[in-house]
Image (cartoon, rainbow, N blue to C red; front, side, top):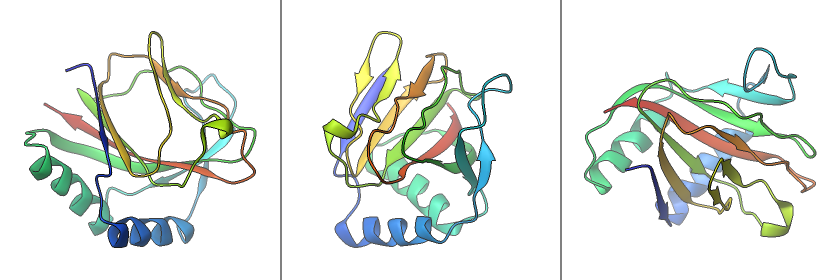
Length: 151
């Protein structure tokens, strides 16, 4: 498995809960790699029961056997983007919680692939794939929830 995409992964109520939780998170300035500008925000969620619940739900729903290393939420303000980087662990689970339009950009970019940012979408990919968040052309925040995992 290199990249897998799953749509409509959460119920409407659970997605609404997650978005409300994101709206009250405590954010810290962050960057994709130590040598790139700090241009977006991050909140570590490894201790959040809700994020452990989501991870367990994905594991069960898609018959996976990954083990969780850590989790966090990234928040990209308008005009910000990530830098190409590689993740730790074996696979990254990346969930897109925001309502979004393609005209806003904000896709998940790989060297040879692009995944549209779509509300309620889960993307699972091998951490050996360099990737980044495309520039956010909207006038609102773009969030992604990440789980770093071992196979």
